[in-house]
Structure formats: C-alpha cells, structure tokens
Image (cartoon, rainbow over all chains, first blue to last red; front, side, top):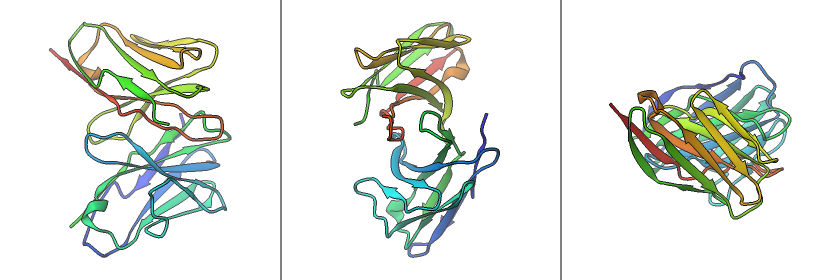
Length: 115
Length: 109
C-alpha cells in the first residue's frame, strides 16, 4: 500500500511561536493532500485540501492566515501553525490521494503541544 | 455533511460479534471504514463502492446499501486486537472524506 510520512511525530512549542509539519508521500505522487485535526476523543475534522501548485482550500472556520499550507510538489505538503496558542494543541494528520478521492492514505500524525 | 454512526460505544467479550452502522442524509458514492488505536493515525480497513457490494477481510466485513444511504461494519468472533475507534468516511465525487464521530469498541478477555 501507499506510504505517507509525517515529520515531526510530536512537537512541543511555546505560545507565540510557529511550527511547521511536513507530510510526504513516499512511493506515489499525491495529486491532493488533506490536513485533518483531531482533538482528544473526537473525530477527525478536515481543515484544508491542497492540490500541488495551487492554493489550499480551507474548510469553514479554519483561519487560512494561521494555518499556512504549501503543496510545493507532488510528494510534499507542509502545514505551518503560526503564532501558536495552547488551544492549537491537537493531533494533526495528513492524508494523500492520487487521481481521485476514493483512496486516501494517512500519515502517522503529529502531536502538537503548545505551552 | 457528517455521516452518523451508531452505536457511540460498545463493549464486547472476546469471541462476540458486533455491528457498527453508518448513515448519511446525502447520496453516497462510496463508504470508507477506518480503525484508529489510541494515539495513532487511522488505519484503512476497506472501501465499499456503489452497487450494494459487500466486502470482507478475515472476520471483518461490511455492506453498503446506497438506496438507504447506509453502510454496516460487521465484526465476528472479536479479538482483543479489534479494540479501537471505528470511523466511517463518506466522500462525494469531488470532495474528500468526511468522517463520522466514531464508534469506540472495547474487546475484553
């Protein structure tokens, strides 16, 4: 099956700093990548969809200036949490798909803790 | 539109069976099922496409009834390793997966 990696797997940062999370598709070209956020004991909530070379599409209620997404190549997407606050602490998971949305492959997730 | 899962939680003894349901108020093109262990990312179980198909892998199977806009996941002779939270995901043709709230399954010895 397709493999998606995320880096880092966990990060602790201070309030007000920015954090970058990388998502890579290792053995296939990901036309589209998705970023999800999951709070404890809750479902995965889609934050944004990004296509290689174009601007990300953000879901309602997600601040695009706070969560910067860059999909520079067919194998790499990054999510930068700018001016992080404790309420941004969460499990961030990316997924990637090829030519259609019917198959999405998830990365292992990044646990962000903002102190 | 978030699909609705039921039950919210279930506790089983090893060897017992369980059914998890997923329904949507919108027409479904496909249904995806995932299992997530605590602290880990979701793991893909199976996709069911239109046509009322059923699929299975070992003792986990699922059905999809697009007329009723629902899918069911069947776990038979449950094992301790089946414990986790099960999510169904329903994409439309041009939109990514939207997950249900999940069903927490606990299998005890």
